[in-house]
Length: 65
Image 1: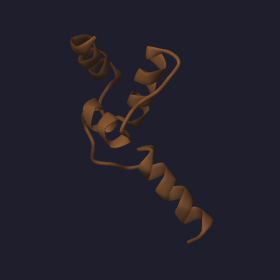
Image 2 (image 1 turned 180 degrees about the vertical axis):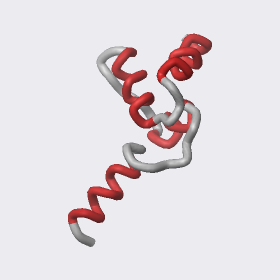
Image 3 (image 1 turned 60 degrees about the vertical axis):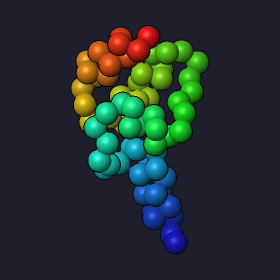
Image 4 (image 1 turned 90 degrees about the horizontal axis):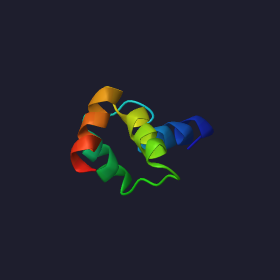
């Protein structure tokens, strides 16, 4: 396995490349857990891996917090 292949695997596993997940809960389930120093950072991390809009993520968070 070469460096490019390893980088592609890492990007895929961190959901920073193409993936099939559409809902924030799917992303968190895939990751196992999300950790940050502030809630806004956690929302950003989920949003960075998400294909839905940031507004949709905030709406979903509003219903659980």
